[in-house]
Image 1 (cartoon, rainbow, N blue to C red):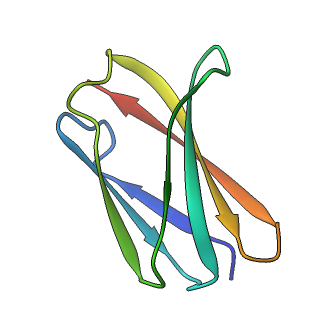
Image 2: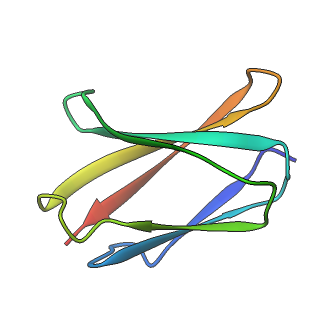
Amino acid sequence: DNSIVLYPNPSVKELIVKVESKDFNKYEIYNILGSLIAKGEIASQDSLSIDVSSYVSGNYFIKMVKTNGEWVTGQFIKK
């Protein structure tokens, strides 16, 4: 499955990304202007915790990338 769940949304300090598939191996976070502001590798796991405390308040997109190149995006708000 390609679904992801982001919580809490809006986030203040930490964003939890819950994934249905263990095939995701990296993530990228973009601001509303489309600029890449963070990226990282993911071990095979059900959820990921990302520190967003230093982000400016606003809307962000997270792109979760699978090992086969497929990707899924989600949107979250930083309070």
